[in-house]
Image 1 (spheres, helix red, strand yellow):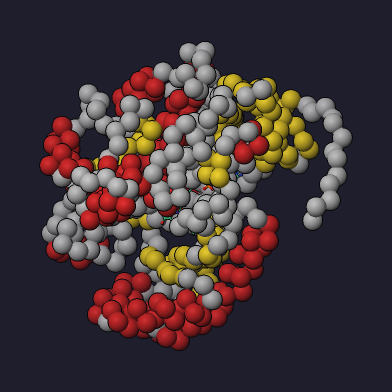
Image 2 (cartoon, rainbow, N blue to C red; image 1 turned 30 degrees about the vertical axis):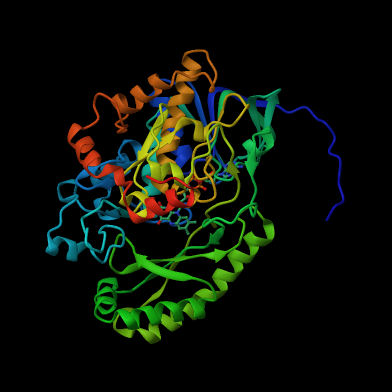
Length: 487
Ligand SMILES: Cc1cc2nc3c(=O)[nH]c(=O)nc-3n(C[C@H](O)[C@H](O)[C@H](O)COP(=O)(O)OP(=O)(O)OC[C@H]3O[C@@H](n4cnc5c(N)ncnc54)[C@H](O)[C@@H]3O)c2cc1C
């Protein structure tokens, strides 16, 4: 429809003012708010459109975090591991992951024990134990709430949609939001857009891509649901014993559902989460959103019937346990920031002076060896005092499928929070922030391992060097060859 309505200008009440406004309370935004408060920001506001934090993690039922370790080293710590340290104390039954002592082990009995929990082993000649926790989303939701409530410098605004940036030239000054109280605004020295879809940066004039500009592996929506009354371990044993039958079952399952569908273990053996991929659907397009919600829900009863009838030994008593309260959103807009990271950076293991996160990319490219992510990937070109961590960060079409994962969103979120706090404290802007100070706070105060710091584990560095940082894997070589690089 191409008709327009011209909205009359009006005066909006300023609801509040703060140092740092975080819009979106998913993995990235929740971490950003906490990191900023802990780095000394005096007043942080966390604005979220729903009534809880975690985004895809808790509301989209994405119940699995891949590759928090490389070999025996715990690589992704900080706020990410804090989730599980806390659950260990408050609800230990709500997550499952190998212990730190077992990381990197190759003991066949241990590998067999973890083989049913996808992502915790690396099947093949280099099989080892990897830390990839599975968790109960509602328990994590409670824990994320507690983490926020423990920070006196964070003010929460839930059930509030950030709708429009307030700009002064190229500098962001605040955000207009909608809520049950009507349309109001919050003014801020720094704004962190953690909406996952660039809702704020796309209107602030930051350069970004739009869905369909270039195909990516994240051009897919989902609606995750769970089945209870199952015996996943029994199913797994059957799948190991009859791999050919298991493959047939998987392809038939997708036909019955009508789109790619697969189930994985949950934090308990009697529940599975059913992941799905609706190809070429844009999570910010109203028709695609409706299509996804209806199509997946319409498929659930027939899918359960098929599974129960086909594999009664493990699924005889299966039932619909629950459906994720929110749409599974993988990709929409991507920032074209001060640096656009690419697969070639991973294949060459590019070193960045402004590195703010150091993460493994599953078995892709570097066979698990961590890669560096620079601050400039969350920094929009030209727009001042706006940071953009999470799944909408600045990555090219090839890299985004490896960077939209939860650990990277938490990591870039935590770094954004610290950078925003440092910028405000130093009375400077996000483009001029003292990145060395940001790195020191992350490494020495917030337990985030980064390369080339005094506290970087020398044993880890030696092992990475021996492994040439994973740059000699067939995938890394192929990426370099395709780019015309011959080393
Ligand atoms: C089905 C599915 C399976 C996946 N599987 C895995 C997996 O196994 N492991 C893994 O690591 N990753 C997986 N991912 C990817 C991962 O879950 C996400 O990329 C990641 O959680 C994104 O975090 P985020 O904070 O950047 O964005 P989101 O989780 O999208 O969070 C954005 C937050 O902002 C809020 N928000 C949005 N717009 C506004 C607004 N305008 N105003 C206020 N609030 C707003 C949202 O409600 C939400 O809370 C999967 C994703 C999906 C959908």
